[in-house]
Amino acid sequence: MITGKYPSLRLRRNRKQSWSRRLIQENTLSPNDFILPIFLIDGSNKKESINSMPGVYRYTINRLSQIVDRAIKKEIPMVALFPKTKNSLKNEIGSESLNENNLVCKAIIEIKKKYKNQIGIMCDVALDPYTSHGHDGLIKSNQIINDETIEVLINQSLLQAEMGCDVLAPSDMMDGRIGKIRQALDKSNRQNVQILSYAAKYASSFYGPFRDAVGSKGSLKGDKKTYQMDFRNSNEAIREVALDIKEGADMVMVKPGMPYLDIIKSIKEKFKIPVFAYQVSGEYSLISNAIQKKIINEDAVYESLVAFKRAGANAIVSYYADRIDKIIK
Ligand code: PBG
Image (cartoon, rainbow, N blue to C red; front, side, top):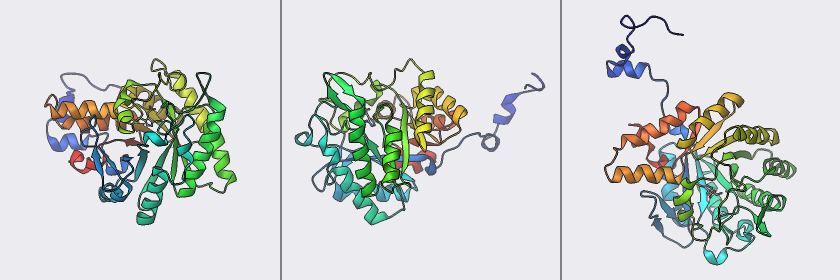
């Protein structure tokens, strides 16, 4: 719908002054749009930097309140917990995922005790931080086996829910796990636990720094292409989301973020449900390193985040979330 044309129509007129540009803005950011990932390590009194992710740290449980306080002060609605499990606790079947004293369980209890419902807690449901081979599922004759993996994921979900996790986020990409987890939650009287499905999760090179952060980088044998999606596909993402909604997902995630804005947009348009985007570790590192080297300026962060909103994302998981006040300014 175009009314009028040059020279009577000049789109630059609206851009002439800052006040006018502010009036015609279509998208903005607020702290409510963010989820902050937090990396956990065992031990005490440690805040450990991560080589590949400048500005991001791993926290021991007794230091956790430092970062959670910060998230609450900046009015971030939810944190996402990711453990760096000691190698000595990893095995073929990821049994540490079911230990009620594992890092994630301890962190949930700590946060709920101190902050009640001031902030939401989201936990990954997947085995990769706990398996010696670094895969998200169990392996039998060189295959990631689907249905047997789901049995473990159900127990991991029930355990996290019992500890007080608000939002379970299965990130494993096994078929059928959302329905099975929903059923198990409902059966055990946990109807109110939300499920955020990593519904469209691609096998991506952009996860590199994260695997470094959780210590699965060295151990990962092969790749995740038999369960995570092929980045050449978009129709398949629609099918994944449709199934997860049918199975009971409350919200869906698209991951990685910036190279997949088309996917966010089409899912939002088609399903009208809450769609979250994950600005993953590789995206964070690329932008942060380029800023550090003065290749691009700091405004690139804001630009990258608004792009998600423009595409239709409701919220963004971002390692920048704890600094969002400065970024929005
Ligand atoms: C594990 C998981 C991954 C990420 C979140 N959960 C990595 C993977 O699938 O290998 C990646 C997050 C990031 O790169 O920031 N299931």
